[in-house]
Image (cartoon, rainbow, N blue to C red):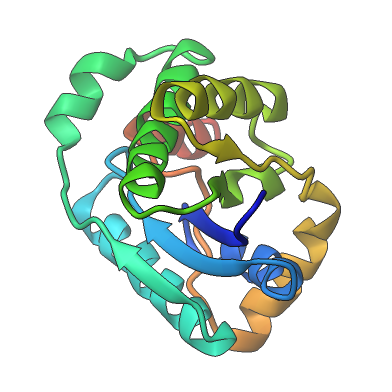
Length: 179
């Protein structure tokens, strides 16, 4: 990348900690919180607050897109994985790429790349697709090796740590299995 301004999509504070820690030395990072998939609204707010707390700790500015178009997300995502996950990646990364293009960032990335529970290859495909559309670069390091460190940092910072990816369907899958 010519300039080193990178817009980082953030799903939540805990997932942002390790990327912030290692990428802030290489890039001029700005966070971007946009997650229309998260349900319920209180969960959306808790994750936003943990994102802001993590960003403050690392000295990272965050653009918060506070829109909560849950109905629109649900009407396009579908209910079965992996299709709903592909749609979710495209929606969130598409908005991030758009914001990166408008803000003259060299490129964008996402904290989703840290999770061993997400489909890394599908995230990369979605990121590359929307990057081409918006004329920006998608930076896709495999951050999964830092997952244990992100959990450690989240505990140290007292960040809210959720038990599911955020969508109503993953919440059901996570908690209904226990019954």
